[in-house]
Structures are given as structure tokens and as C-alpha cells.
Image (cartoon, rainbow, N blue to C red; front, side, top):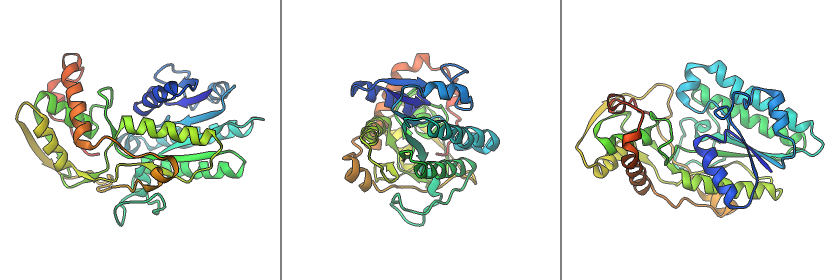
Length: 309
């Protein structure tokens, strides 16, 4: 049995499907399922650990902008709840392993591209600082005899059931329905990774961790960068309607450039991304077209989204 915290999130849903297909039993745990399934609730977490062999810890205040607005909440959820979880694992006679989900945000503004996993951690914002603190806790847990591995994600996209203001789903919605693309920093460049690739890679990582492998940090990346201006071009080519562009400066707490090196994931897990941004974006745009009548976001809201990473 594997406990997946944050099981109802974008990555949690993809991972659960992958683990089910591979014959694993999954215990979901997500505040979206029940207010009781809150990682800040030590009793609920302790009960959820009963009978599990491992934990994939995805639950978090997962947006840069949310953490920036409420750093206290981000600290409580992303750091203190993880500290409590690690303590609960340490108290068990049979200690489950844990895979901790971190982010490419921990690298900050990298000095050179592509970025390897051994690059210095230089967080620029509140969210990134909580992820660095989480990685520190994971490394300390190894000293307690807990098998704790770290994964880092990079601009994951590919599902209509995602936050509407994240850059790829926001652009894809405009591509599907028409409107204005607002680019906050058109030359900002990111390594966009499709959710199908991430779910598959994380499941492979779970298999390796479950086999007892103490792995160095691994990021799931394509190794290819796409600027927001290039992404807008993909949206324009995909759209059946003309699109307008509006240019705005970047937010002062956003990382502006990131491309990761995929070599470690390939060498240690045999994983590499299979879906490039153009194909993945077209898939997502088509999915939005198919579900357009059911979209809950008003046209005016979609066409004026403020877009960073």
C-alpha cells in the first residue's frame, strides 16, 4: 500500500492512475476529498500511515503566487506538516519510505542552462524557500534511517482540470475559444513537461524507491526551453480564431529562465520525456475545445488572464 498525499491534484491523479496500472494499491489523501485529510492534522496523517510501505508526498501550497500572498500558510503546509509527517514515520517500527515532491523553483535564476540537479539551490520566492526547507527535512530524515528521495517538477501541464491561470492551460483555453494572450515577460523561458510523462516518471521513481534505492535528487524535464512568446505562437497556430497579444513585465518574484538537464533521469530510471510542447499543447487545446460548453470560467476572465509561469 502506498500513501499519496495530494492525490487529487494534477500530479496526484496521474500518479494514482499509473500506480493502479502497475498493480500497486494506493491510499489517497487529499484535503479536496475531505477536510479531515489535511496534512496539518497529525492524527489523520498517523492513521493514514497504518499499513503503508511508502509515501509519495505531493500535498502542498503548490503555486508561487499563493505562497507569496500567504507565506505563513505555505510554511505551515509545505514545511511544518512535512516535519510532522517525517516524525510520524520515524516513530514507526516499520518505517515507510518517502518520495518528497520539490520543484525547479529551488534553483532560482540559474547561472547557466541546462540546469543539472547538482546546481546550487538559490530560491527567489516564498514558495521556493519552503521547497528548499522540505528538501532539507528529507535529507535529515536519511540520518534517522528513513529512505527519503527527492523529485523536482518543472512546469507540469496537460489536463483541463488544472488551475485556469497557469500559463499553459490559460493559453490553451484562449487557443480553444479565442481572446487575448497576456504575456508577463515574453522572453521568459521554461521547460514545460507533460503530465503523462511526469506521471510515468514518478511511477518509475516509486518502483525504484520501493526496491530500496537511495537516489539523488531527480528532476523530470524535457531538456528543451520554450519562451512565452514561442508558446503564444503555438497557441496562434493551434487556434481556429485570431488571437491578440498583450505584453506586460514579469512579476518581480518569478524565475525568468529554466531548462533542465534530463540525463540523470534517463541514466538512473530509464525515463525520458516523450511529449514535446507543441504536441502536448495541441492535445490540451483540443481537450478544451471538446469540453468548452462545460467550462466554468467566464469568457472575459479567460481572455484577460495574467500569465507568468
